Length: 100
Image (cartoon, rainbow, N blue to C red; front, side, top):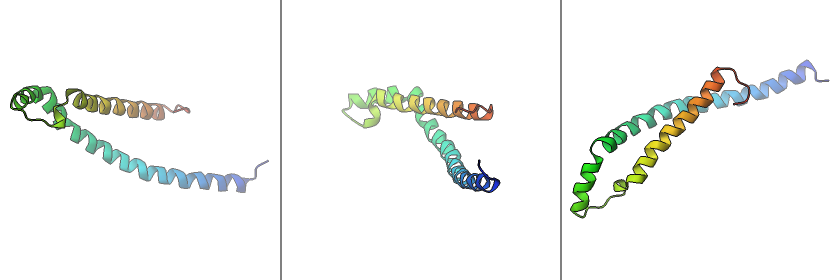
């Protein structure tokens, strides 16, 4: 049987891990805000004027990796899906579900 001291020491070890996790989570919150801010102008450009610009520049022989429609769309869609996955994990956490 485990003693009070053993339980306390084990909890102390886990506490240190959780404290480190929280440091990383704080960084993630900042990163997520920055990522969303970076995505916004790309998304607006892609859905508003990208096609017109691409057609005009392609006719002039200009090439740039951003002209790959699938690549741009996939990155926008990927970030949206990743944010949804993060939100679902957070929702389970908030709802007190044990298996996140």
